[in-house]
Every structure is written in structure tokens, then in C-alpha cells.
Image 1 (tube, rainbow, N blue to C red):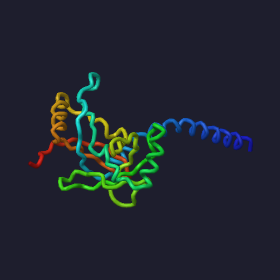
Image 2 (cartoon, rainbow, N blue to C red; image 1 turned 90 degrees about the horizontal axis):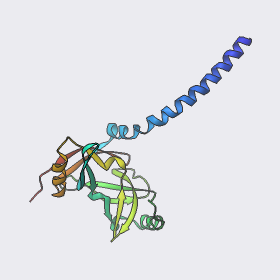
Image 3 (cartoon, rainbow, N blue to C red; image 1 turned 180 degrees about the vertical axis):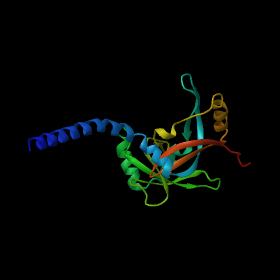
Image 4 (spheres, rainbow, N blue to C red; image 1 turned 45 degrees about the horizontal axis):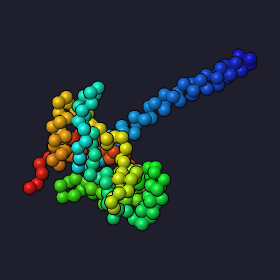
Length: 191
């Protein structure tokens, strides 16, 4: 009987240590699961881009992207969303999440068509935080996975030039409001 009590004590003690050891590992593994889930389950859309800067001396060529959907017109905001954002933005802090519903235009580039404070039940949407209101438009931040895209050496300037001329499209996977940039495409503009 004493042996079984010692075994039970050791098992409980071991399980506590195992739990303590697994907790930091779990925290480290959860962070990359979100983009992995988006890549696995997400739907592919295309967004128009605007250029920023293509070179990092330590990491090589990359394109820092800005998207046309990062500035939306206040006419897309319902009165409830407008009131909530004006109260939050008056404190000089990013807002709570805002959900931007997207639909493709005739060129198959996805554009914002509506906003809400809760995730829409149907359709493609992105989760964003509003951080500034200026000249009847709202500036939005869609998160880190859309900000930077690394490219092959000596191709960053070419992509920046394409973005400057409106010829660069970002291919993005979207799932449950989260987005991951998967590639960049050059496209021909209609004349």
C-alpha cells in the first residue's frame, strides 16, 4: 500500500512538472498556428497595392505594402460604427476590431463594401483596427501578415515600380477575418 501511495504521489508530481514544461511550448506553438490555419482554410482574394520601400540591408529585398483598402470612406460606416469609432479614436488609441466586408469589382480586385462591429455571418471580410480619421476617410490596420513580403534578390525595385504604376496585385488568403499575403502578381491595366 505504501508503494502505491508513493507511485500516486510521483505521478501527480510528474504531471504537474509535465504541465509546467508544456505550457511555454504551447504558447510558442500557438503564434504560428493562426497564419497556418489561414493558409490551410482560407479563400484566395486579390487586393490592389501602393508602394512604400523595397530594401533592407540585413534581410535583402522585400516590398512593404500599403493597400488601397487601408483607407475607407466614412460612407461605408453605419451610424453605430461611426459613433463607436469616434469615441475610441478620440483617445488616440487604436479601436476595437472592425470587420470590413469585401466584394470583387469587375477586375476581380476585392474592395470594401460595408463595415460592422461584429463578424459578418456570410461573405469575405477582414478584421481591422481603425487608428485615424482624416478627410472623411478612416485609416485601418489589418495586421502584420499583410505588411511585408520578401522577394528574390534584385526584384524589389521592379515590384515597387509596378506598384507605383498600379500594376501590382497582392494575392491574399482570408479566413475568419484574418489574412496572410501569399504572393504578388503584376497585372496589365485596362486602357
